[in-house]
Amino acid sequence: MSSAESVSLKKRKKFRLSDFLYSLVIGIILAIFVIVTLYPLLNTLAVSFNDALDALRGGIYLWPRKWTFQNYITVLRKESMVTGLYISVLRTVVGTVLQLSVTALIAFVISRKNFVFAKPIAFIYTLTMYVNGGLIPSFLLNKALGFTNSFWVYIIPGLVSAFNMLVIRTYMNGLPDSLEESAMIDGAGYFTVFVKIYVPLCKPVFATIALFIAVGQWNSWFDTMLYNRMASDLTTLQYELMKLLSSVSQLSGDPNKSASAAESAQVTTTSVRAAATILTCLPIVALYPFLQRYFVTGLTIGGVKE
Amino acid sequence: MMEAKYIKKQGAGGITWKAIKKQKELVLLSIPFVAYVLLFCYVPLFGWIMAFQNYKPGLGFLHSKFIGLDKFKFLFVDNPDFLRVIRNTLAMGVINLVLSFTFAIAFALILNEVVHKAPKKFVQTVSYLPHFLSMIIVCGILQDALSVDNGIVNEILVKLHVLKEPINFLTYKSLFWWIVGFTNVWKETGWNSIIYIAAITAINPDLYDSAAIDGAGRFRKMWHITLPGIKPTIFILLLINIGNVLNAGFEIQYLLTNGMVQSVSQTIDIYVLKFGISQCDYSLGTAAGIFKSVVSIILIFLANSAAKAAGEERLF
Image (cartoon, rainbow over all chains, first blue to last red; front, top):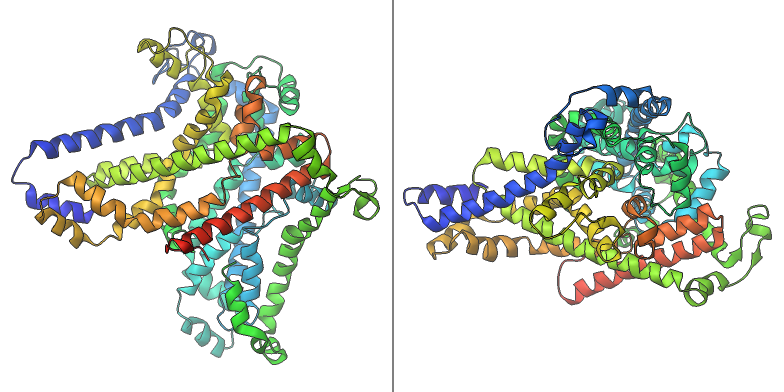
């Protein structure tokens, strides 16, 4: 914080014990925070590279005791996991491209200031953030539309999120109107204005929203369970991971879960589960350092107000 | 909802045939979007009819028998299950709300006290990471951490002599709500703090300087300037989240539950899934869903008018 910095600079000459203790306490609290956040992930990583039988003895913390890649090989030999990986990548790519394009276009349409239907359309979209039919009616609708056992259930029903649209609209509202006007004088239509002028200018907000959509697509599993449970060639990686993880929680009293547990009846060791977990969060963790600057800007663009 | 005022203001005068003709391209562009939102977001609302019918998929809406409020009577009068489910949902919703607010605000305040840029950036970057992991991964990691064999939590507690021997945390009814609450804290604290950190940057730096002249130490500056400075942000977020209290969650309870804790882990969403989808009682599932939607909307309005009465910022 610049303010805190300037004040502390003024005081640097005089060492005060109370200030030192204060900083120490702050440092300790944040160190604990970082450890609590990172330890479980690093521990899973270590276990995933450790020999499966050896890991059962326990005592593995941050470093594997007996190195092996066998757990990863075991996971990648499972056909269901490979199919899951393929479907997850596909839905993330297709979903992100389609959802972003459609959301951006509708945001563009309703951010045209003189468009007579802009406000009513914005209203019916905004209202969906507060009122919706709920699980059962949506489920029946999607079923009636033929979205069970279909890849498109991952894409179409969630094509436009009102929240993402409002974020993009807020950003577009901040761009000068003269851009549109001058292009229109040159004979461009609205669609051309959108593609040629707005898309390049909106790259920062698009990056943020694309990131949100992609993470959402990659992480979702409930739609798989609801609609594509029976289609083994359409299940996602997250869903396969859930089946793998729940195969050990034998106490499960849920009929859905025990059924899937029975499916993967062979014993899955902690190390194999760890390897599957690491593989599933790998894309996010690997891209995370590069992407993280986008979401903070995005959240502060649209999230704080509205 | 905040748009409603504007429509009235615009009135019928704004939308004329002449204007529509002039904006033919925009109108044509928007037709698919309107059709889309009507189909996927508004058509399901008609499904609410099911709650008042003995809906049979074979008969459809038109031929299923109307039974009035029987399904609601079943939920609230005839069996005690649903009342327990409401209790669980509310309890976990409130615990989540209180814990997530306290931790996010505390984290933002503490992080703000870090003077050096590099460690601050590092801690912040680490703090967002869990938000991007799926609940499946988070619950899997949690199950490992709480495990009876070699789970780190048991290991530490046994070493500290808090526990005599490792226990299976997830089978204790009294712990379940708190485990859910703290799992959410682990996943979302960093993420939730972003807004507060942004709000802190907007506080006028002169305030800190004058407080320093008055002899305030760092803690008193945090307590008397930073915290009041983000009060409006806290308030508006609280408002938004009160409407969400019944969305106490589905994923985490679904993934962590087991036979031993079912009586405290079942939320409204899980109940809807269990009866509505697994047992195909669409009418009962819809009735439970309607109850949740209606209560949520009432909560939003109550919170909003409470804010109005208190003279604070409002949502709409």
